[in-house]
Structure formats: structure tokens, C-alpha cells
Length: 485
Ligand code: RVP
Picture 1 (spheres, rainbow, N blue to C red):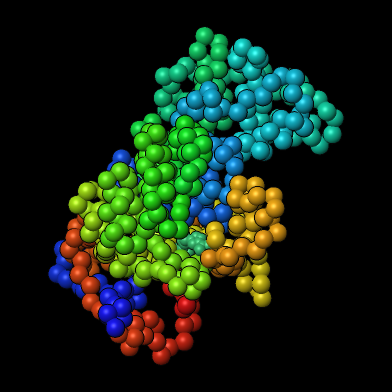
Picture 2 (cartoon, rainbow, N blue to C red; picture 1 turned 90 degrees about the vertical axis):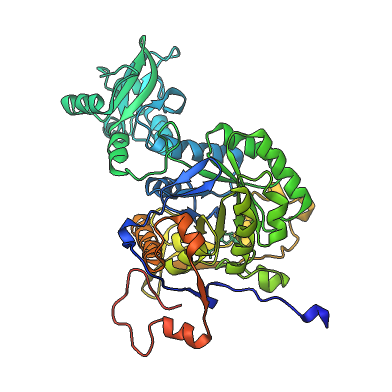
């Protein structure tokens, strides 16, 4: 029947990059790219908006390495605002007043201790009601008081001879003050009032991360997932300084979702990436207003959409269909999900993506949320789909469920799993980016746009696929970028 004359759709394992004459040394391959109309990255990598992958810790690490973390939305608006502020505060030279955590002289030691750990800082200027700087308090100052257990106030424990600097202080001058006085924080004052803070940690970290993805003010970039129709979250995230909002939807080719995404795009300063989509028609429906599009219907490692619903698009075909449309309007394309090896990321870019988004690849790193668990002597971290029962249940049941529906059973489209523990994000990212650069070397592409345009694919048979993995040997030592599936 006509209905069964169906087109073929391909995924990562169906194709390989055809090697081609090259003058490009992998180290010289330029992997900088755009993730949306106004936001550029130095590496073409994003971390998934999932509650076992991206919170501020991973987002900070991603941006420092030149990529972008996308904060998940299993938290309320206040929490996401605080997370954005953490990222924005992480590497600033002068942390501006509204982002400086301060203490008051009459606060108790217990109180200030709790406040500092909740805010993730190890010291705070002490100010009065008029923002006049009275002293500075650090974790070291309060430790003896905590040990003794007496409930003294900040006034007694703080250092009251404070070294300050004016607003136009340079990193060098601030460092000199820190060395001279053996301190780690210099409050910035104007007319005796606190207007900012410079920290040693901030200065060192900026120096260490020359390749970081930064906004126009030199702060780290951050993305935020926003549900369609979540106008309040979008506005709050935008005001808190998010660089890119990602409309977070499993099937964005839906009139209501698109209308909402368009409204959000028109009402915020941040760029708005619309997703997920997987077809040419869906791309045509959004490229006139979207600042970027995200592709992936069912490829995710923890995703059961294709088996539960019967719908999906193998990822290489999905990316190339969407890219054919998006490239005409200069709208960047992000390939989201299904990437297991660095070679998959290279293939996704070669198929037309400007950047790739990964979940499972990062969920096992130190910076991802959650603890390391040990099973049978091996270390793992939890990793779960945002459409899994567990993630939906902690997705603020109040937001999605009415009281009387609380007992109702979900129809999940994801599973809850564990992924091998991997250590630091930086070394994982190094392997991923290095693999992509080597792929560019095999194709002879010096830049991401050239890679997208010039790469050619060959089709692989199942024999070819077997040949491509280690075979007929027993692996004796683990490679940092390969483990058998
Ligand atoms: P992966 O990198 O293969 O682990 O895939 C991560 C992607 O999977 C996410 O960015 C998201 O698009 C998708 N996802 C997240 N949760 C679920 C689900 O529960 N079905 N899918």
C-alpha cells in the first residue's frame, strides 16, 4: 500500500564521515560556534536541562570550559533565579552589590553560618542598614565560636579593620591588596557604602579559564529551561540574567506551544531556543521567530518515547532535515540526545548541527547533582529521564497535578537509571572536544561551519559497524573515551 512506501531515516550508527584530503591538524580545528542568534560559545557543547545533570555547579564548569549548561526546571522560580545568580556570580571580578551576600552585625553566628552555606560563600561583608561597611566575616572567623557553641553575634566575631577598594579597581590592584594584607575579599565602596566585592577565588578562576563562555559583562553564560506557558519563569530567568531560554517540550511542533514560545521570545531580552523538533515541517513552523532550534524526538539514553508512543525520528536524519531549513534563516541548530561517543557528536555537527547537547555523558561527573553510589565495587551516579516517574513526581507535583489527580498513575516516557562515575567535567569535555576536532581533521574542515557544509557521509552496514568497534580482542585497560556499550 501507499502507506507502507516509507522513507528511510538514519541515526549515528548508520553512518560514518567519509575521510577526505586535509590540511587541518586537529589541534588547529576551531570549534567555536553559535548556540542561538546572539550567543556564541567557544566549544559546541551544552549540558542537558535535567535534574540529575545541570544545576549551577555543572553550569559553572561548562561555561568555564567554553560551553553552556542549561538549568533544569524541576525547581521553583525562586530557586532557578538563585541558580542563575550563582553562575553569574561565579567569575565576576567585581560582584555587584545586589549579588553580594552580606551579614548584619546583630545576626547570630549560627544564623550567618547557615546563610553562608546556603548561599555557597565562605565570607561576607558586614553592613548596617545604610550599607556602611562595618567589618567582614569569614568561615574562619566563626569556626571557634561554633566549636564553643555559644551564640555570639557577628559583631563580636568579625574583623573590623576592613581593606576596601574603589569601583574602578583592576584585578592586579585587587590582588596586590590581597597579598599585602593576607586577605581573600576586598569590599568595593563608594562614599563609605558597599557597592561590590572582589574575591581571590574570582580573580584566580578568571585567569585559569581563558576559553570561558562569557556575556558582555564578562560573567559566565547560562541557559535555562522554561516550560511552554511558563511566562513567569521566563520573565524571572530573563531578569536574573539568563543568556538563553530553552522552551522545554518533548514535541514542540504544536500550535499552542509555538504560540507561547513566540510570546515568550517577544517579551524577553534573552535568546529563545525552541524545541524539541525533528522534522522539516516543524522547523518551518518556528524558524521565523526562534533564536535557535533544538532537535531530538526520542534519541535520549533514558528516553522511552519511541517505545511508549511509537513516534520518533532517528537523530541524524532529524538533524539534517531541520538544518536544511534553519540554515536558510541563519538559525542555529542544536542536536539533543543519543550521543554516546565523541564520534557521535562529530556526526551530529557534520549532519548540520551548530552544537550538541548531552545528558548521560555528563551525569556521572563530579559537578552533576547527586551522590556517588557504589554497586558491586563500581561507582555510579544517578541519572533519570525528566519524563520518568521519579522526575515527574518531584517536578513540583503542585505545578502539574491537581489535588485529586495526585494518585493517578503517570504514563512515563523515561526511565530512572545509574551511570558510571566519571570524575571531573573538564576531563570528559576534553575528550569530547578532542574527538570532534580529530573528526574535523579527517574531513579537512577547519571550522564548525565548514564541517557542517563539507562533511560527507557513507552508509554503514552492520558488519561495518562491528568492524568499527574494538573486535576480536579482550580490552585490558580502560580508555578514557571508550567503553563497550
Ligand atoms: P542523552 O544525552 O542521550 O542522555 O539524552 C539527553 C536528552 O534526553 C535530554 O537533553 C532530553 O532532550 C532527553 N530527555 C530527558 N528526559 C527524557 C525522558 O524522560 N524521556 N528525555
